[in-house]
Image 1 (cartoon, rainbow, N blue to C red):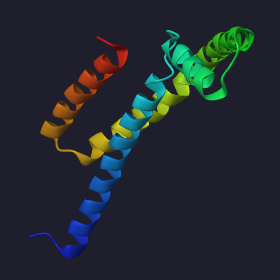
Image 2: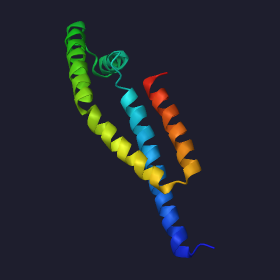
Image 3: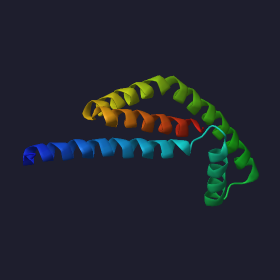
Image 4: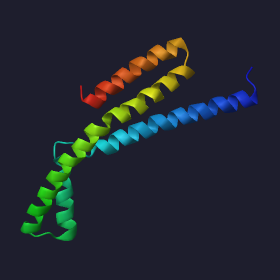
Length: 121
């Protein structure tokens, strides 16, 4: 039977892991709003136009600003992607270190499915 202290430690680790998973999922959802296909630009322009009552000239200028900024965001994402992957890989290894061999193989499969979803496959 596990001691109260051990149970508390397990709960703390489980809470931490759950927080990481929820945080990563939330981050992915948030970042997917800023996709490189320009849909978010049009949504932002529409919202700004409605809220600020933009005239046609303002809309054109803001659309160009959004297009340029989208390219800058993409460059930044590409530049920082290896850092994000390194953090993700370290997190995954730390989680695996907590799991049993059977759980590790299931966790590997879970990660594979998550990666496929992220890539849109």
